Length: 402
Figure 1: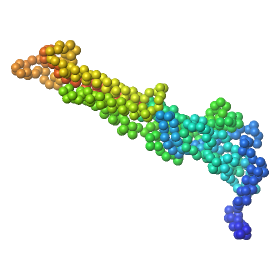
Figure 2: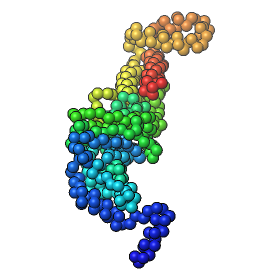
Figure 3: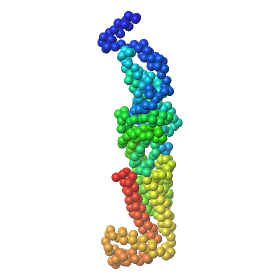
Figure 4: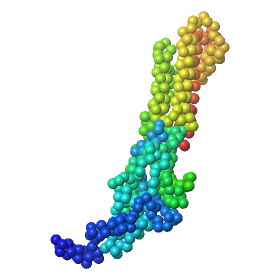
């Protein structure tokens, strides 16, 4: 068996120039960790006054969730952390050209690198089963993968047309920047392996380093834009339709007996929508969602419609003997002028006399309480429809950023 192994080794040596056996690797591990008395608690520089430079980059794999209520971002990704370990250097010629080895991360020195703005308690990156690559020049490369949960301040002002900026802050918890310094490898996050999120799209990313309380930190920034199609279909469009229904109460005849119940139903529908939206948003007094303001304004419209409808029904059923105030006369005259402006200026009345419209509109005797109710319907419909249209257009143009 030994002779066969020697023949194979001789063949590999002739064809490749070297033959690495398990004994070579064992000898290398023995020399590095036993003979040299490697201690993972000692910072990996010969001169302990020298600074250890740590090079960090991140590859984002996916964004699992943006929790607006708890202001939390959940994402998956891994870091590439590199540094030089001067205590793990060897001459590859002495070990049959072994250029690199894989070492369990718990067996060598590594920085106490943590997610500073994490949503949970501090956890060690990677795991006991993770291997770290070490080459003969002492370059150490570590790829800790994790599903991270970090704090992300949410500004809901323009929800659901909002853009959010989330900062992922990693820091050295113990080592000061005169011992270990973090350097960014790339100016942005690596997105080559990123899987697109169904509700959020990434606008841009950036990376920067800074020193906080004499400790080196690296901040990965992700700028996100919400995909608003779902919210337009499921929230905004029904609200606009409900706003239209709010004004249609003035088309229902007063004698139908359904005006009040119709108004109350529309009002309660807006109240339900306000509850649904508030469940999706954080409790925050620093910024107010414009969509909330719009729904509250629609609730205000609903209250006004209920008040106007209640007064209108009371007027509609008044006895004709009661005197009409001047404001009711002016309302009816104005309503009649609007109607008459679409027809001829002269009406043909029953006695075949031709009388000017102003004479008909000016006589209090021709005005009945039903006429007042009808005038309120006409003016109420156009006033509420017009103002609702203007408010809706202005708010949604402002929200969408056009």
